[in-house]
Image (spheres, rainbow, N blue to C red):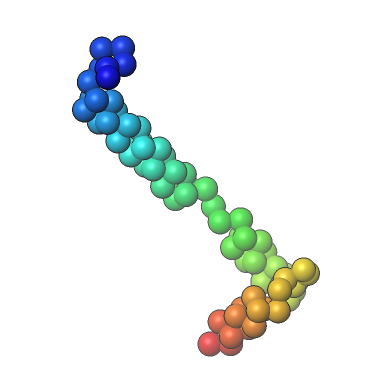
Amino acid sequence: MNTLGISQRERFVSRIRFYLLVMLVMWGTNLLVPDFEALEAQRWEARGVARPYIAVPISEIERIIVRESR
């Protein structure tokens, strides 16, 4: 069934192009936008203050401590 005179192949190619464009924009945005969590950690470290662990699950704290102890 044709929609507005476009063949099914053309519609498929158009969708592939659209999703590739969306993925490219998302990838580029991920590279350009800074990691706010890393920036916040650097600010705390520059001040010489320990990172605050408020409302952080114990399992995550254990992983962080093991990672930082290396």
